[in-house]
Amino acid sequence: MPDHQSSTDETSHLFGNKNPPVRVTTWRIPLELLKAVGLTLPVAGGLYGVYSSLKVTFCDTCPLDLYTTYIYTLFHFIHTCVWIDNNPGKTYVAIVFIIGMVILMLFTVLEKERLKNNYAAGDTCLKPVAIFSKYTWLIRFVSFLVFPMCFVNSPFAPSDPFVDPADPTVTWEQLLADPPYIAFVVHYFFYLLWQLSCALLAIESSLYHYVRGTMPFFGSCPTVIMIYLCVTVIFFLYYTVWIVGFLCGVWIPGHTSVDEDGVVHNEKLGNFIMYGYDVLVIGVPVFFSVCRTFGLGCKKSEDWVITFSPLKKEQEN
Image (spheres, rainbow, N blue to C red):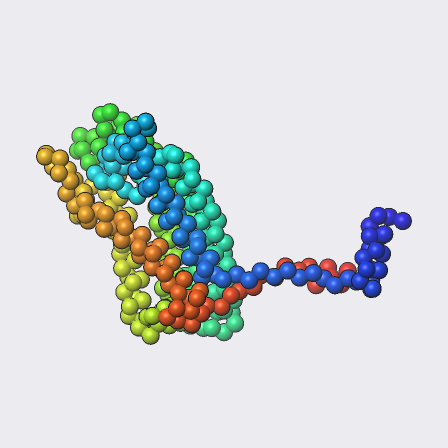
């Protein structure tokens, strides 16, 4: 008797019939909590990067001069990327970021399906959100996927002498021949995708809460949600133009600069733009996701179920 037949007979005897019950596995997925965890992990990694960089900086046996990095030389202040671009912190930070990106990729796919499911079920107010998700989810998914390339292309110390894009005598040929400049451009490209994906995620959530009136503490005040959405879009556009202006040597209002006495101007504005954007697209969404997960200031969000089982035709066979 063939092995597979004996196995079938044994199973049939075990269950008392020829067709044993089909095993169905289900996963309960709290989507809002999934988003909160995915966005929080990069923050945790960044904080460790700060700790690690400062510890190395003030260590006599392994000094690290954060003020000689390409990013500091270009912007004249320490951007968040400086904290995560150097070892020993960079290795740990990269691992934490990758885990966060995997979670956000999973959330992106599931959230897209949730919106499509609800809209198809007759929740017509979700039409603008479903359309937005349809045309942006893949952008976010790919952006989260490739973001760890930032750690592969970490900017290093600038060439000596520094090829300054703002110097009117510097040509594009000189910039494109400068390895530190190219390294930063590639680094920033993937960082820009991260900023874009976070902005799109925040916009989608804002639109959802706007049409459904489910924003924690502000569900009955759609004006507040619309203000948040508009401020987020403006911040993203200005932040992007602000950095691209540095790369192209084009002065943008609010650019940091150094005078002849070595005094840095607009440093506080630069930090406000940098950290303000993080608060808008990471801090606020995490706060509201936690609130919706536990029903704080709003109705508790429902869990969704993923079911694994054989196809019906396979079951019949």
